Amino acid sequence: MTKEAAARGYSRRLVLACLLHDASECYMSDVPRPLKQEMPRYREIEDHLLSVIYEKYLGSDLTAEEQRMMKQIDNDLLWYDLTNLLEEPQEGMHRSFTSRWTTRCGRLMRWNRSIWNYSNSIGRRAMREDKNENRWDKLLQIHTMGRDDSRSDLYRYPYEPTPYCVLERMANTGMIRKGNTLLDYGCGKGRVDFFLSAQTRCQSIGVEYDDRIYAKAMENKKAAASGARTEFVLESAENFPVPAEVDRVYFFNPFSLEILRKAMARLLESYYENPREIQLFFYYPFGCLYLVSDDGAGTGIFR
Image (cartoon, rainbow, N blue to C red):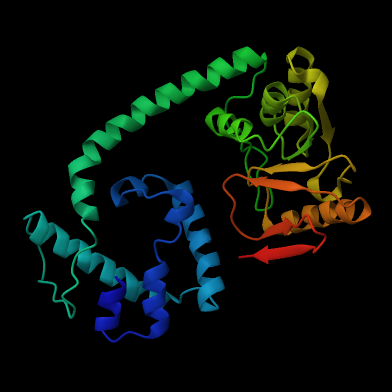
């Protein structure tokens, strides 16, 4: 796309935008266009992440006209791939190209050859993941499965537990140990807290603003094998005073940038009162990330 945009004489800004248009895949992985149309939440997150990237490197998000021009290149290259690489002539007018650079590294060929197998594998993988979720819930003696968006809004996102496969990888990193205290913002029903407390022997504190979901976490605590090492607080993240012993913090993209900033301000207050190494763990991050350095340098903001 970048070479095609340059060959068409588009502005340097638009050429750079074409270079960055797949940058979100570094964070979210690539999804073929046909499947992406059936994933509205994925598209919503992708659009937001791309806006952040464009603002960082271009100074502002793309205008409607710039998006149209970039989309036209993408569609033209798609037409070329179908017509010339896969020998599937497309109805409509012939696409003419200014540049000889007319393929996208065989992406579409991979799509057409693997789309059927990929679609089938999604179902098989989902079944395996469901079994893994059930298995861990039973082992930990808790109930955390399911999604709840009945009280979600523009500032707080729906309850959705972190997949156990992600938590397994976290526990295996060695970054969370017996002597650590984990703070879990937007803890939901407590899955992260119960799992990591059981696997790493750390202490954990879960903060949840929804009283109904908080009640579920407290029910789980009564039966959970690692319940003695977990604590839950019914409080909004921005109002929760961070205890001095907290040195690990986990976020599963639980709320908006506005609330995240306030929560991070609370975390910084605790850090300055009791300087210590604090490690932050973000799962599906987007927006603005604050990083607390262990040398007292303060914060950095990355968009």
